[in-house]
Length: 290
Image (cartoon, rainbow, N blue to C red):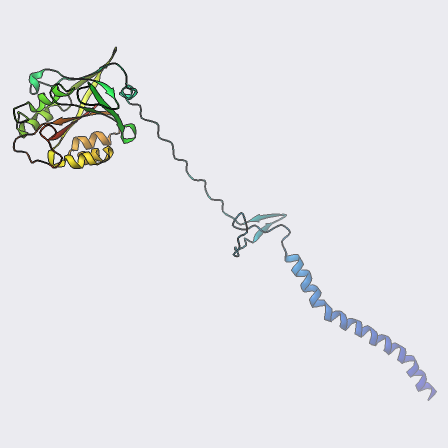
């Protein structure tokens, strides 16, 4: 009996120690998953701030760009937009007749040199003072610029004693009732003026390397539209009806353009804006000779 008791007394403390160790091991096994998960979550967090696709975080959620780790560096996966292409600023047009827009005090002489088929081959001269306003009888011609500086326009009077009477007389002549030539004769004369030499002088200056690049006529039925449109659009209207005008406008070369009234032509349709001495408009397009 004492042997049994002695064995029991020997094993009891040992069993208690084993039970205590078992409890500790069980407790550790319970805590280990939570501790491991917390450790993994902490390691998964990025060390640097995570970039977004916009400079400022908006109110709505912006998709976050996950970093890519390369050895010891963190590079955000982003694409840098290419800078917009810079459009060159177009150079201002240098116009051969720019001095007219300064309204010089000297009289301008504009001289056309036709062949024998027009005005018996005699030169056609128009003289005027450039001005902002050009009432009839003052010896002035109105100056204005159009098409971003490509066109300098001269508006010149054609009545008896007017600054452009010589041109109207050479192209359509004069009768008691208006123009002296028929519409067909007038168109033939205008065609003959194509590419003729032109000379312009201002004071001591003389510019002779000029030519008539195109000539056009706006008939009475189109005058109302021509007068009502802004001049850039009026030129486009003429260009749609005249291939030569279309070509010189599209060339983008500087042009000195004059507009002159024509008189009534027998048998021609009368427009709502027509009058006996404003029954058409003649346009001459002058450029530097090639």
